Image 1 (tube, helix red, strand yellow):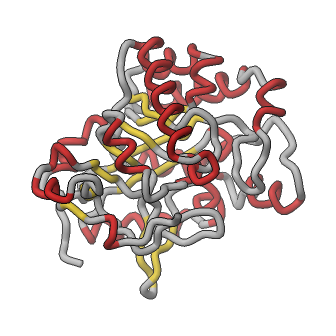
Image 2 (cartoon, rainbow, N blue to C red; image 1 turned 90 degrees about the horizontal axis):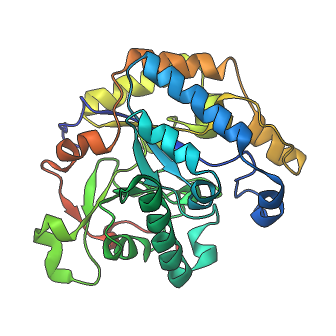
Image 3 (cartoon, rainbow, N blue to C red; image 1 turned 120 degrees about the vertical axis):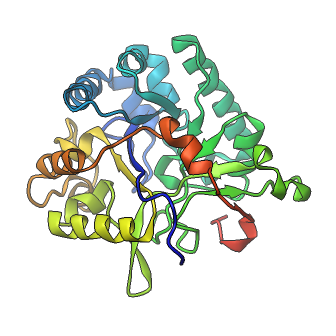
Length: 303
């Protein structure tokens, strides 16, 4: 791969969901929703916002529509600090499980919720657990979404598109094969950062991957990506940094999602302090500059 021109871009993102919003195993979120008032989530978000304010860092917050609907003050306090609000779906179900028509309805509902809270329509979307589907991109384009961040170029038991590009690209509109030369009709895709080792893409930039790798490995991955001229996109959840307030079902699940090696919060601080971080919205122009159009047929999206 030739040296790209995105090496100066470092993006910080947060997925704002509550402690029980996982998809391994698949839970019936309605049981938890009835009991949870998201007050601890609000406290965790405020702690994140204070930390970012002290360091003058801006970030993108992908927020579940149902949480925004129940706790609009979570959206308001993020907005007041100048961060970008983006959509994480209405509830945290995998897209393949809810289907295209229900997804369209829920995205429309999310747009209404966020517009009612802050008067703005979000530019971006990230699917719960990166559960991109073949129909996702055309639906987002149809709903007026400007960019997507649902592609994770790595293979895991739950998600991932390992043969997808590791750099930003426009996804060709499947419904309009003549649109490939017109950027305005093509959705911008911003893949989550991975680094290549022995021919395979390795995840490191958030979630369970950020927990299991020591700082020297993360530092090496950052350096390698910078040398390639790729943008850095980090992602975090409030419960990646602090203990979950509730008990997840099953030993294997608790082990995976509560696992911490070393001080994860300290490692998070190192990332923020070592890189000038921005929101996606603030660097969209740079991300689009020179970006190529890629046909969805050139990489395999799970059905």
